[in-house]
Length: 420
Ligand code: HEM
Image (tube, rainbow, N blue to C red; front, side):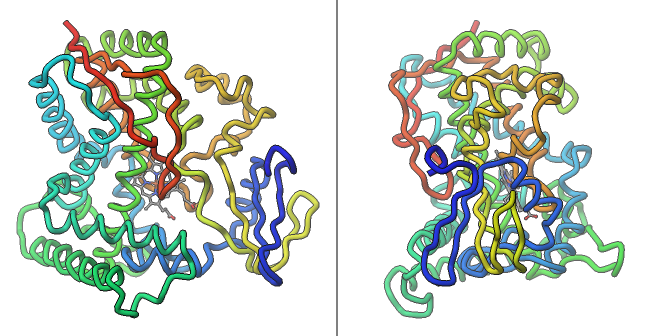
């Protein structure tokens, strides 16, 4: 539709229900920034999302969202993330050790490995629980919950959650497990006198400047589940595609390895060294451009009639910002299908409109976990590149499996050569 009709496509789904698909950076700026007070996530999106995560940052709007965002933002600031560095590094180290013990020619699915790693990191960083253990009750329940919500978002006519179908009952059981296990973690933490270095502790300490109050146990529960949902599949999927793209472009992988060797000098990717891995960061940025983990943002509904780029947007219309296409829009990206990390050199970034690059969203709802995800991803990419050459088993194109995230269908099969 984008190729045929251009940057704003109107779909009349049924009388009174219109969806617009938008791919132009100026539209995104209008909706997410300059006129953002007129656009909110609609109920048909918020309700299913809220089934698992309750009223967490991703599934709330208005004043309630503002309060939560204000309270949570400081925990995600770059300088606060230093507290999570060692948790992340321990997880990465233990994966590298496992890999070192494997036979050199063993084929692994690096997409599945990135998922296992980011699950472990997110569980430990959030509330010091290892969620990569398949037998962990909470991990199992969260998996069922996420799949259930995905099912409801893609099949809006499914039976209400209270109808006792097998799937609904299984979901309700999973949700009870999630709530009780996470609440228990929160309540036990309140009794502890020693500080932990995880996000739960940071969020427990947060107080609102206006009211002097912090988040209640229920609010913390919802936010923990929201952060879990938003924070591992996105990063795992992005890293899987990054290894795939590096495998297709050995010259880029060589340049990245040279940078890693020069910056790390055989040592660990410490908190101070990560920002010096500038090329590695550009590789990740370019991978997010070509293979973002999402097709676009959550839908937004117009609260009042508006005008966008000369077109009338009726009150109640839904606007979908499909940034997948903005990220390969020929008006803003030369050779859009090519993998060229140097597009992200500062002088090249300065030449593009800001909203041409939105894999993290933009405006007030921009990804709160961006610095967390960048720190984690640059650490993982550099630590693996330092010790291994990652070789694709096949250079055949890998298809997208469009689920919650745009995963590589069938995974990314690689072999690992240990570096001297
Ligand atoms: C490569 C990794 C990631 C990508 C590409 C990504 C992308 C995004 C995008 C596009 C949005 C905006 C959605 C919208 O406006 O409709 C978003 C929001 C959000 N992200 Fe991320 N994300 C990533 C990792 C993370 C991580 C690691 C966390 C937490 C630890 C996280 C937590 C959130 C939350 C809570 C929101 C909702 C923010 C709000 O509405 O105020 N994300 N993310």
